[in-house]
Image (cartoon, rainbow, N blue to C red; front, side):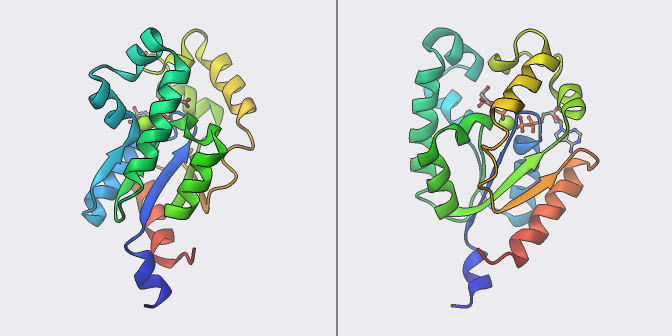
Length: 177
Ligand SMILES: Nc1ncnc2c1ncn2[C@@H]1O[C@H](COP(=O)(O)OP(=O)(O)O)[C@@H](O)[C@H]1O
Ligand SMILES: O=C(O)C1=C[C@@H](OP(=O)(O)O)[C@@H](O)[C@H](O)C1
Ligand SMILES: [Mg+2]
């Protein structure tokens, strides 16, 4: 089979910092390609019967990270999906290795001011509790190399979600990976 035909059945896996638009753009891509959308956070929340925020509060981050790795592993057994990950899914090298092997990994980025603008006032992200600017800035610094493994990076700062989805789709159609 020609490489590009083969690629068209691969997963698109969105990674990136909180607030870069993985969940939003994933929904748009799923609609454009008529692929199922799998948002890893939503799958975990559904299976645990509680929000990500409540899982962190009642069972802790390590418990969440274990579920995140397990969910990613089982979801990526399938092809032809849009997979929106949580921003911390890249913290384990084995998750990154798996994602690279199972689809086109697209990292969404945005500058700090845009991220703070997008997530400020939203209390569903436990790691951002407190001073949002300080929290985002510190996590971005901790993870500054963690997203570099992606095949493609799209800076969303000055794009609306439709424009981001369109960029990703173009890369998906042309990228040899
Ligand atoms: N390109 C964009 N421009 C402006 N706002 C955006 C963009 N992408 C996402 N948003 C908004 O930012 C917030 C966080 O988006 P979300 O998709 O939940 O990000 P993530 O899943 O990466 O944390 C939402 O309110 C969403 O509407
Ligand atoms: O970056 C992170 O560590 C997290 C990102 C969140 O998802 P989004 O990136 O979709 O906000 C969610 O998985 C959890 O709050 C932890
Ligand atoms: Mg999300």
